[in-house]
Length: 361
Image (tube, rainbow, N blue to C red):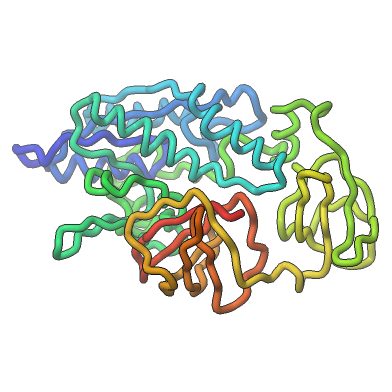
């Protein structure tokens, strides 16, 4: 039961899923004055995704979030963010593939919508905090400093997507389910009879659908603007075939190369200027160094400091020394890493504490 004195007003970002719904329920129980909000970011009529099944913020998801708010008795609002989502998430996503990169749109969504647009809404509604259903935790040290640390659920941990958060805002962010296992979150939802207790988790990129990345990119730019090119073997330069656009490929890709070839080949490099896709043996995928740009730091990094670095969401992280570069960091791994991919983020950790990150070039 909520205490008679509020612990503060909190704006809860509700996707319509079970995690953010349980986050709202827990905060209400703890005595916070809860306001729910859902961002309507994408018209699911544009694609082949069935709403409510692995989606995020669709019309069905909005209805589920509203049902939870009604059941738990707190105010609920819907914000149309489709234009901003297009400009901040979808357009950069498409352009990245056209540049031979593999983007991470969930980072862009967190950066420009959840922890930018909603932060402004939090202030407009005179809220003290913004809460989400992310699997991450906030800790406070003895000296009063706030840090983002990894979730207790290793598999669900989402700190990789949070490195762009403004460090000055961390003390105003709440992650109520970050200390829980996913199974426990569902049990809480079941015990509260929440409508989405057994709802399927959102999976993959919420706006792409069954058509896949390549078809989505083509639908956004028009097939007449996609440039064909050659597929060449590294390092000898032998032409192995043709392709209809570099947007169909990503580093480390093995399947779907369109080659009638007896060898197992992997995409090693994508040249967006000459429109060449370089393929070769798996051994050429391993590198012990990368560079990052557009870094955001939640804590200072000493030149040459040894930190754990994740190069993709489900990468467990590898030890590396970080050296300041003019546009970011040069990262030197102790062991070579497979398929370091331009367009993905390299995210830095000191033990389980999120230190920052940047974009791989």
